Length: 341
Image 1 (cartoon, one colour):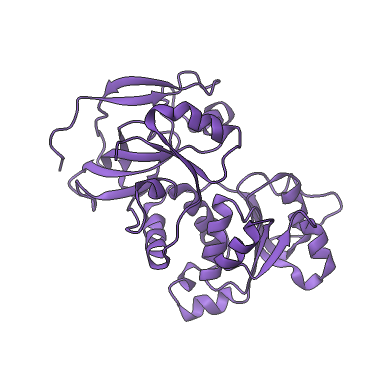
Image 2 (image 1 turned 45 degrees about the horizontal axis):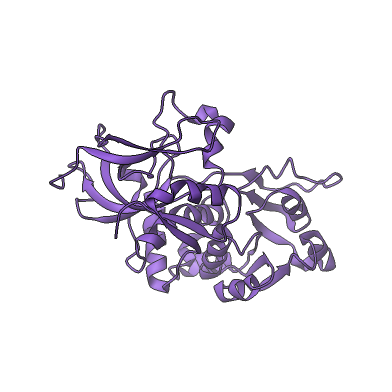
């Protein structure tokens, strides 16, 4: 199935040298689906991810040789062509996160696979939808796939909510893109306590998202907070910051608990003298699962939630967008409009 009047060439942005963060706009042939799960997607908008222009140098085993270095791993767009067996048809509005090894979304059309796709939330516009997949997938999988909360608590399942109600959860960096979603998901699933590490204006936002306890990092460390009262220990930590914060999480997690980080290795950050035995202590990467994004879309539509967006730029401003993200100057997502709308 295909949309008619497809172009023969498109505008695409390339990272010519994996050692440099310099990007170049080029004109290239329209990508062609070659596999049974390949969809051609007309990209509406994409959002840079911090560090992605260094992934090939830092994690070379992930990437095939001679790959097309088109950045942009998350996006929203319209299905232009789909394989016969696909649940997605031309004209469907979708959002997704691509595996980094594939050519990305900073081009007018790209190839996306069935398992990565989901219909975009109806309540989000193109900009909002493009800023959503990576952060939500990371938070969702940190709590429900890698973590010990039961996602069915969100839908009101009594057994799931009874299980979740016994669990205390700590989210570090709870004012950031991933952390904010994690607080929302954990609270909605019925966690017994949701502890958010935030400061300033983010304190009220965290409470609104469902945080039941606050650690103000400008006033005390997680270790100091945990040592004040032994009952504050948590069953699950989702760390979004790494570094000294991750190290201090060892003081807060219970014996036999779970300590997860999206930034660094908990074992390598373990302070000297700490000998707790945990059920799980690991760094994890999210998986590009369209099935999860479908459930996330339902959650977003039911609750009218929005992602954190720092700024929106036109396609031609791609370099400035990536530079801002790489320099850690963005508060929320920077979104690049690939299509004119």
